[in-house]
Amino acid sequence: MITYDWDLIERLLHEVQNSAGHSFTPRPYAEQHAADLAAKGEPVGDLDHLKTLACDYEKLLFDRGYIESRTGDAGGNGENFVLTARGSRLLSLIDSSIPGNDHPRQVLDEQEDALDETTFDQVSSHAQIA
Image (cartoon, rainbow, N blue to C red):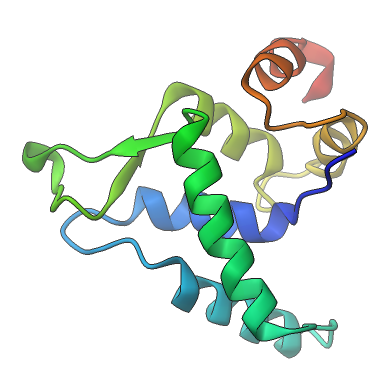
């Protein structure tokens, strides 16, 4: 079973939303995520591992259709992204600013690979997950 750092993925997806006109850079986003964890008194762990994980997540999110290259007329520069419909659904499920986000994260964690395209599409289509 694959486990994901949903907080880090949430940060990356929010950064994708805000990446118009500038490059998407997962390593600094991982540093910001670590700083936020430290400010909350939560364990940060190995920062280099977190940076690598953020880069791995960027590739996974792109390869599996959660994000795609941003077009030039939408502020694209060849190094930034936009959320796809699947990515928007993922963000809406795991967004910590939305009350009750723990249940969708738990349901996702129960899957063999929650970000497998078929698995995610099937699980996210059930109204009771939200």
